[in-house]
Image 1 (cartoon, rainbow, N blue to C red):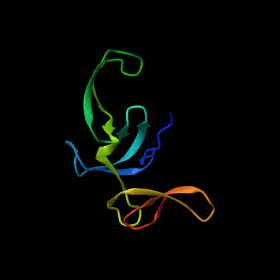
Image 2: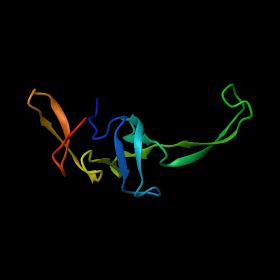
Image 3: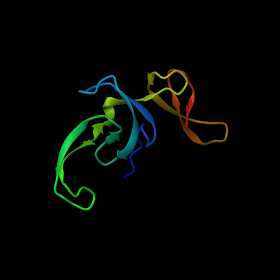
Image 4: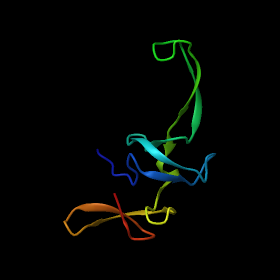
Length: 107
């Protein structure tokens, strides 16, 4: 079953809950099966790695962990504030996402 989420890869999102509340970042990946998204610089965790080709020394690396999409809101392209998302048919008959605050289409 293919779920339709209000967030896509490449969107700029605002975090409205959790330790990183108030921060914004770019969506790197959307995990539809878990309803989570990986956002640049948000929900950083320390991961212990064994030595490998990428990290010959091994050690502790910081990386982003998933954050539930209910804690994210898309940033309105016109004024830079968090907004809810709607869907409507545009003049070409294609279903597009739009910002509820400004009514502007989201690319």
